[in-house]
Image (cartoon, rainbow, N blue to C red; front, top):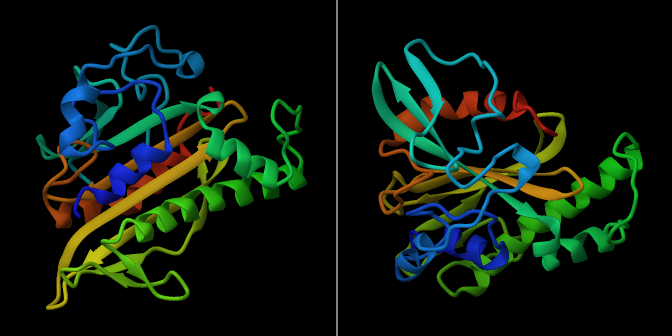
Length: 252
């Protein structure tokens, strides 16, 4: 159950570049996924899968005293977060070319944006259409999660429990800036029946007309990447993650 959210995202999205231990695959798929290495899209100015996608995108951002963020070495899609010189977690970014995402193409069409259409990204109408498509993208993931059988939603898709009694509590969708792109912040928490957080996930999704940008991190003991080992560290960093996303040099 703990990996289910990322597994479903992996089924819906086909990544451009796949890093070793990537959190979008289940344990059964990780060994297969780690052997697949394709060049990262030129949208981020990367020359090969050895270039970290954060390298050319992050900008100076206020952080808590003693905290730092840097593109992880030997990883192509992770941002390393440290506090007082000690690593505390990572944030993952993936980029998905539109042509590889038929589901999202359909969502764009349903929102009024035909494939290969020339659109004015300064148009208020276009902003509304993109927001509609991105909201559909997030909802689609929640619905897939419900269909998995491990979570059972209520009628309003606002609460659910696993077979182990963990309460699924999705965050309200929030309109945010991902660089100069209008995006959506989403996520959920898994709450224990007797109190306490079982898992917590935060994600950002944005679209620049050519590709989807997906940023995520979590508190989940079973995840190797895009994860904080301690919930308290994620809780400290999470408010600053909005600023990190908003200051990204996007579109590139």
